[in-house]
Structures are given as structure tokens and as C-alpha cells.
Length: 99
Image (cartoon, rainbow, N blue to C red; front, side, top):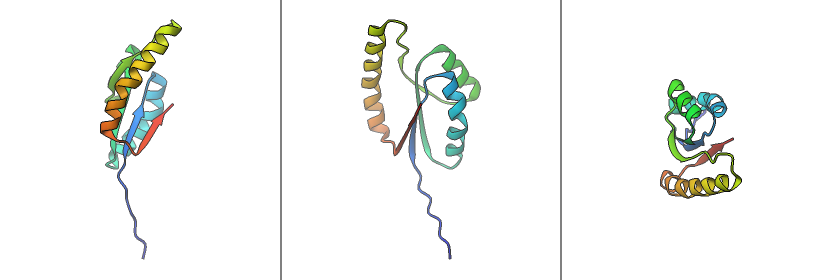
């Protein structure tokens, strides 16, 4: 006799670019269909937000794109990490997927 054990996971996808939306959409949809709990995060980035809406992926915006200045990139990246820390701590994922 064969027994199957299904483990439901909490999975966090950090999706930052339009290319990543196209790449991860299949996996997000498939995992949701199999009753896994999915959290998708991204940053304030116009093209990615518009494509996520078209592709019907719910992305929670956390932080923004840093621009061209190296100091601003570092500053916004650090700020985003701080903002993500409490969100991810409360979601408590079993698995993290990022590009």
C-alpha cells in the first residue's frame, strides 16, 4: 500500500522585475492551486507593477528602486531590507524564492 503525505508550505517570492514576473508566474499559480500559502513581494517599479496587474499576480510593494546613484541604491536597499524583515518574520516562510 502506498501512502502520500502532502505538506503545505508557506512560500515567499521576492519578484523585482518584469522578467521575474514572467519567470515566476507559472510557479506561483501552480503552488496556489495546490493550496500552498504564497506571499509575493516587490518594490515600487512602474513596469513591474503594470505587468503584475496584467498577469494577475498580487505583489505586495515593499520599498522602491534605488535609481542610478550608488549611495541611493545602498540606502534604498538597506531601507527595503528593514521593511521586509518584519513582514517576513510575521509570514514565517518555509521557503524563499528570489532571482
